[in-house]
Image (cartoon, rainbow, N blue to C red):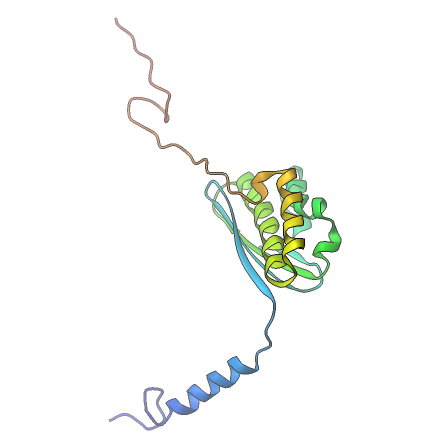
Length: 169
């Protein structure tokens, strides 16, 4: 025989349901968008919301991105559009898969897509089109994913296309 205050008891459920409904109803509605940037096998998930201009990658500030020589690549969307566009926006990015370079390219794509999506949803259409045109004029791969992938290796050689040498002796 089960006790009356267990979670599966019908007497306990109405209170639990009311608690859940109350908590979801009292949470403030925040303006946010979630987008993905991809390059090869690297995937960056960007979560943009109202804030004070922070951009973090895997919990670290974007200024700490390694390798240093590719850091400017990650900054490109901010430098192209100007920091004033990012002043009231917090972007948190989770990135995994791929190598260092592919991750950097996935990050820059996620940042560019997130600001365009945020402007489309919460600001206005003309501002979004302006941002989109500016980014497309600079580099199309900021908004449109690069479809190239690694070709699988085949037998008879050491790679996808290279074959082992033949000797007729």
